[in-house]
Amino acid sequence: MSKELEHLVQVGSLEFGAWWLQLGNKLKPEGRKHFKHLFHLIATGQETSLSQHSHILDGYRQHVNGLENLVQFREKNTLVLSNHSHLGPLEGYGETILTSYYVKKFTDEEIRWIRGHGKSLKENARQLVDKSLGTIPIYDDSFMSLKPIIEAFKNNETIGLYPEGDNSIALRQANPTAGNLVLIALARDIPIICASTWFEHDTFFVRFSPLLDQEKYKEIQNILNGKLTRQEKNRMKEKIINYAMAIIASHLPEEKRGYYHNFQDFISAFEKLTAK
Image (cartoon, rainbow, N blue to C red; front, side, top):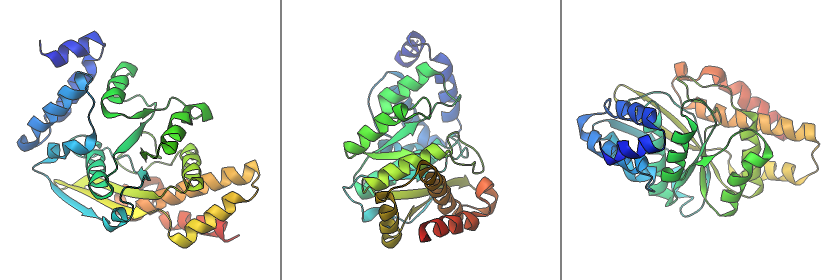
């Protein structure tokens, strides 16, 4: 038995290993050896980062736009908001790897992705991923669960967040709690980048866009610096996360926009809120 499988048996994650290897078999031959290396690191609990493993996707085309929106934040921590695609040979993880790679390349910052509490992985497998890739686990939507993320903000780390939660083929409605994290980032003057990602025709697509222009950014900060009621704050976090998802949707193919098919309506609702 290999070292990887021995360790997976010890921690009770053999099912995870079988699923992970099955994903790897869907890759092009050029990328499989690189995938096996990442599998070895995760399965044996060794630390690594996703940005180092872009060669896993060798053999596929890449279509990446909006890199100029990353360059301006070189050596500055950001909050990266991305749709949680379920497409491609790695069921969406390929898009995550590419997003991590380009953010690292153009900002020199490694993304620490927030790992939710969905049912796609068992807890022992999640802990393996957390240890190896440095992901930040959250277990519910309470403020206490958000403390590790707030600490990461304080430590000037770049954070990656899927506002939808679970992955999907077309966009789901965002969790309002994600809006709370956006407001925290804005209050700390942390730039926010949206990443629209998908896969089709043997091609990975990634589009980076700023969430807010400088003028709108100042408007939001002025609103946050005022005295908001709980109801006003809840409305703000819901509107701003829907606005972020609308920005993401605007760069996706129409059939992948899902809940945000009429993205312009969400953009207009947010602009009306900030105009008051």
